[in-house]
Length: 401
Image 1 (cartoon, one colour):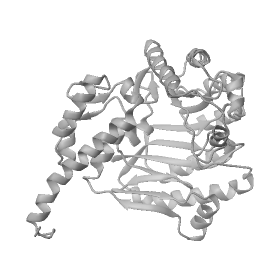
Image 2 (image 1 turned 120 degrees about the horizontal axis):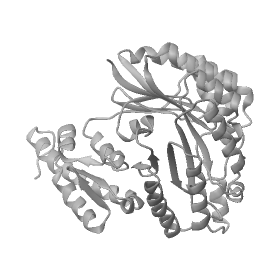
Image 3 (image 1 turned 180 degrees about the vertical axis):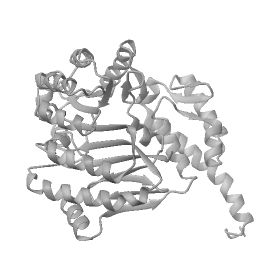
Image 4 (image 1 turned 90 degrees about the vertical axis):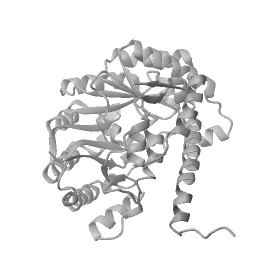
């Protein structure tokens, strides 16, 4: 059996940008869709020979809003993936969708070509909150899309929710969570609203609009963790909860540092020890692929020791966490200074350990950026203490006078 690989395909089209969105997505570009299909198909054909010996066990189509690309184009893309790559029989194949574009005919076509997981952007059950950030759907369309997905025999359904929306309070957040649970999804992704620079929401806040503050978001988050646990959902990452056996296998590749290849403008890859990304420009990507021009935006080879920082940053987003001997074995780094800090976190209720593994608690997840940042600083200092004497011994540093 070959090593396992994930594939991500970015569909950069949408009907309208939501006020909080800073993803690379473009409304009103239908005229480019056919050329984009040709470009991605050509890119897949070009890349596939480099993955010989690898088995693809996850495919994720994200956006944008992939479903506005249309059933025929999505079907053609997935058939090209099947033609060019060695897909496992149980491959997880996910497609993102917004409720207003997830009708029964389209979902039926996707299921027939192998899509077995749908990630639906519900965001809220309150129509006023949806309108406040210029979402195009209402909650009735969410229930219609869920019904269509089940009729299409999609048995792995994920719903996205956002807390901290304009006008949202604890009571309306609870209504949204309860409404989502009533739809019986296998998976829930629940994100705190972030005001990204340059978005319309950023402009609104700059002009004085008040959003739920950090304390309010923290209360929403902690209540949600308890409620989803009571409902039988297992938290496996800061924002992600699943019924047993329904964790997102593709997203776990990112958090566990597993290899994946991406296609499309702005898409990232981590393959062959190298991380690289493509230009965040639709026209340049299409012309580059079809015309043989440059499409790489950034590319760097990641040494093994630098992967140690990624191990901390990504694994501590998950409830699996980190483990001393795993860390020592993989990166040849000293775990003792990290453990001392983690013990301090444990006393604060931010971290815990189970079966020799350290992981952050829900309270720790709320301040994870700060906690992980402190651990990275400690790691960097410990690495220098190990590296400098070796470099001096090898004559690679000038002796101090």
